[in-house]
Image (cartoon, rainbow, N blue to C red; front, side, top):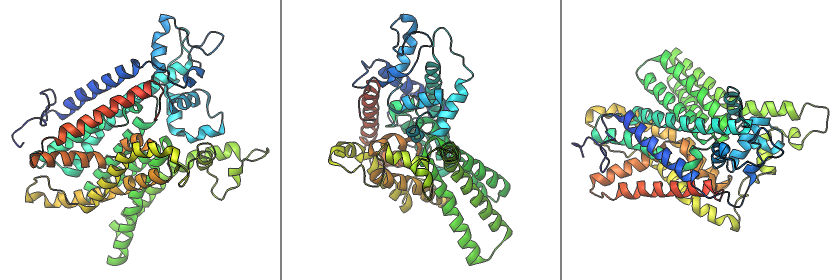
Length: 458
């Protein structure tokens, strides 16, 4: 393996000496395949909710014309499925119904802002423009998250050996063929969340490395930038707030160091910056709640029940009231197939978190990188915390099947698979790569077919 210039079994176009170009080619090929699969789906399945969106700006109703000049609009309908119907409607009309507050405030505002630069024409309605913008945002965000994951992998594992180079390259390849599949191409928040969350992890890891290199100003700036990305990610998907655990963990570490070793200017400044960063992350979750509170709870009319709660969160209310989300609420016999569908990912998230905390990772690096191994272990433990908590929450409190797509914004389980693949090659179990990659590819294609046909699970 050490003498190979490419990943085992890969074609020459995926060349390790040109990782960005190779990742770009792999991304383009996979996204084109997913796009064609979705477009080729018979649709619309058992649900015709997409047809309720006014894609045409003229006509007597919301029914899409079958005129060939509207073929591109009809094609876009294949990507407007499930929650994307809500996202498009909210971006076009705002939050009309209370239950729509379950869907990311930040994502819908970003869609509405970007769509405002494109004016409907030739009978095309605003909903069609928003859908096209959403598809473009998802593709661009997914691509940028692939690049961010590559740079994050280099920060965490380094490139001190061929095995580490392969790990850093293989990880974003796995992210390209993520089980999130078509959700990373449709007007959904998953791609944007992955870009923001993984980008935040990259900046956080860079801040961590700068701190160890005694680059205080650079470290503090990157840490606050990371907090900003996590905050925006929290407005896109509420689970983004889990990334604030990194700041809570560091605050405890720095506080303990101050108590045990005595205060110093550097330690106190680092603690202060960390606390500010954590507050910034929290704002990403709190700010949409404040906006909703001002809309629903300050008027003279009869107040909604959630306005009277100790913590008046509209998000928690609508999830509980309209979507039946809550502790063990999803644990019913009828949902057993969905738990079975999510089980592989739940196990993978938990097992990779344990793997990271154990720190028993050997990638053929020389002894001179012992210092970097310590840094790697510290970062892996920190990144294991939000992922592990996500898995527990998905199992106990979420609509469990969504874990197959929301996991796309967390890097640890990709690293675990890549590490196991490389370990398999070193022990001559060469079937590890074909089995792992083939399984992900097959799931992605099947899921894209179901998505395009408006069939569960979603």
